[in-house]
Image (cartoon, rainbow, N blue to C red; front, side):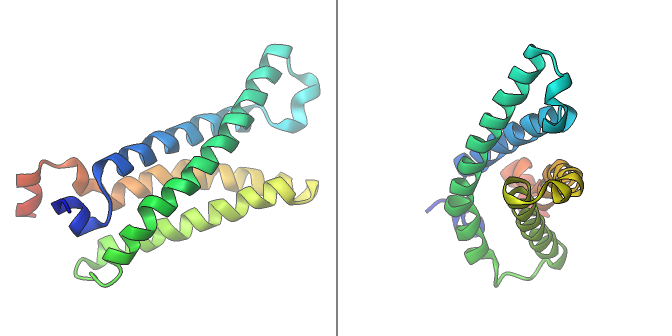
Length: 153
């Protein structure tokens, strides 16, 4: 087991995959937020096609994100749960987990909720999703430092 996996519960490849899928989710989310489904009748065929493709890619990326959470996040939580020496980092981890749960519940509400619910859940889901990468980076900033510099902190 490498030092990173031993200390954090996941390796560099899982981290990179999570970052790539998060960017896909953010990009497709922006397209769907800018061109909401309620405006399909007024869209050009090209815009409607982009909106549809973004919805499909967003759905597939969500599935992949859930798969990666099972692969990377839960082992990370298992390893880090009892390491509360850095209270701020631990609190950021809990905030990230809470935010991911809120985004997931918002996504389910968008899929299965009423149209009235969709009107207010959509912007909340979008802005929580747009904020998530910032919180994730605040939580994982040490992964971007060289190993020697990280050991001195």
